[in-house]
Image (tube, rainbow, N blue to C red; front, side, top):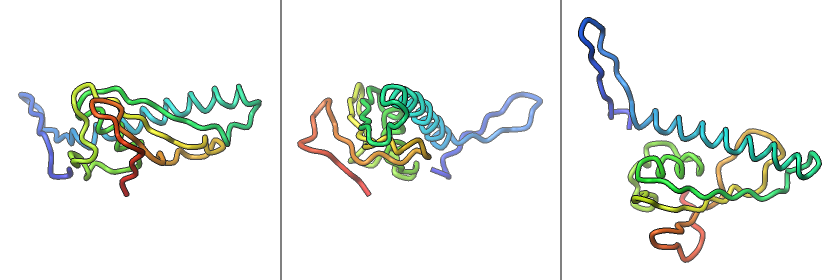
Length: 129
């Protein structure tokens, strides 16, 4: 992915290089921080402050590259696995991601496992290492 650059040029300005895949991965990772942070607060409120053993599962409903970036960052993969045949997201894909326990409010850990729900449900949970 490091070799995948786009150079933006505007008349009278210096060219600017962008790394769209890396930028997509960073945005997807920030989405999980926000979603899981909000969810963690909700769980702490419901559990009276101790949400460390609460289970967290998310459903990703997305198209193509966005879905792949959300799945990849949830699992802790970097962008070098982009377009891996096991994790390519089709149009209108549905993927269930299991983050396991809430982790007691520490830094976000990668999800434990995932499985396809649409278009073809997985026979069980997947964990790519």
